[in-house]
Length: 374
Length: 254
Ligand SMILES: Nc1ncnc2c1ncn2[C@@H]1O[C@H](COP(=O)(O)OP(=O)(O)OP(=O)(O)O)[C@@H](O)[C@H]1O
Ligand SMILES: [Mg+2]
Image 1 (spheres, chains in turn brown, green):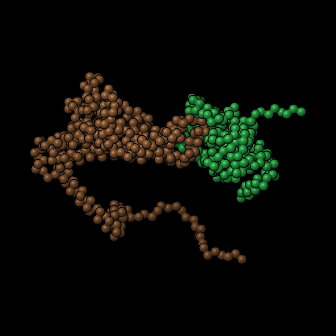
Image 2 (cartoon, rainbow over the protein chains, first blue to last red):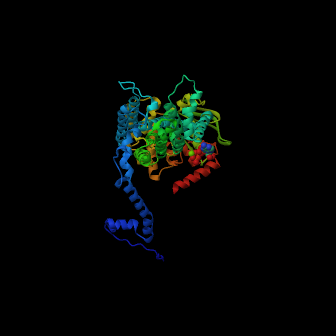
């Protein structure tokens, strides 16, 4: 006596068919996204209207009522909108700082090189090695060009460097020196030898506990008092070393996080194959750890770009410092807002470019690693 | 009557002892693996099988006793460690393939960077090995694109690239679905038939009875019993081994 179950399922043969269409068209979609319910409508209006209003006032000020050319600043005094003439007037100082005026074509070439290679190497198919070699060439050309003293170029001391080329160089030097140092600190922190791990922990924690401003002051102004006078290291170079160490202390912790994400089995397999320590690190552990650490590492890299602004307190004129100096001119001093907005845009554009680079590199890394665990 | 001249063992342990902290995980382990023979290690979880096999290639250190692999006496020096790793190949339970490298690079990286072998020569040697483990079509894929059974066969080929005198397998099939276990065991049996010396930690009784020259049963860090497979599975002489064989036989029935 089989009991008939109360549950049921009905076998049916059906052809595959497309899903039912929702309402299409822009209006229908806008409605669905922003005004679907009373609550949605309230949120849209409460947040959206003030945003629209602000955008309108800003655009009116920045575009409609703006003044673009104003010899001697006359036209600006009457205008109710932005005075972009200040940028047209001062852009050479903003971009190149105290660099000798008649040599500023070198700065133009430098900026073109960096932007050019920045865009070209962002192309996803450029292999990492080619990117890095390209940047090395760009950096070397920049230093030779900016410094001069060869190929008939007049010598320009680093004290006179400034503006965007200085920002680029300081940033590139920070990353180029900082990432390898960070890797060493992160590996050292995991060392079995207490003296090495202790030293690395001391450097990382010590530097992380000090404000960047203090590190730079120490490197640029106090360090020389302790060094023998014959050892005359350039101020720019000293400050750069401070930047590198500061960057490395943070990045080391990011990389350590990446190292911890790699299963112990990876290193064991490499050991079983007889690979010595540095081969294991270079070929097996670091490629994976850096891929994992990449998003956080780019966070630090973008911050390093903005930290170049700290150089202005040492009397070295990065873009922001140069802008500040340019706006001291009594004719234009009232238009600081426009000047600063312009540099903010410059920073924003370069930081977005860096973000884009980071995303591309992440995609490349995950195209390989993301195929799942092995 | 003259005893036949037996060659010295490939791997020899004499009264080897290991502690993790105060936990005594290997106790007076004494064993020898004759050239060309196969030893299967079995025993309950936590009995020290992995620790023992990892001592053989220096992934674990030990505090007391003697270990010899080939001509090398393990004395903790860097040279001894390198020599022992050159003489052994290891296959892990969780494959441990390098996920950022293709199958081919997984195979060739070791020889290129530990022996300085030229890349084309390493590639030339890798091809027949991949053919042997039936993975020629997967040569340029990444580990994440392969099934578990395929990954473990890549891992075996990778270990064979160093032409090891002894192959060490630590539960090579226990992370695999049943239908993939056979493809891995087939490769291992093929290898065994070729005269490769091996030490295998496994609970695959069928494999053990077909391939093993000696089954070693461990419990709580001790070698409790050692016998050829027929004798061991038919009539374990100790109670602990009887219980264990009973357990795995019941699992196999399911
Ligand atoms: N790194 C370690 N630190 C401390 N104790 C450990 C470590 N590795 C293993 N042990 C302990 O040593 C003992 C033996 O472990 P081992 O992994 O060798 O056992 P096993 O026989 O391989 O077991 P399983 O069948 O679960 O793999 C266990 O009690 C385990 O908890
Ligand atoms: Mg184990």
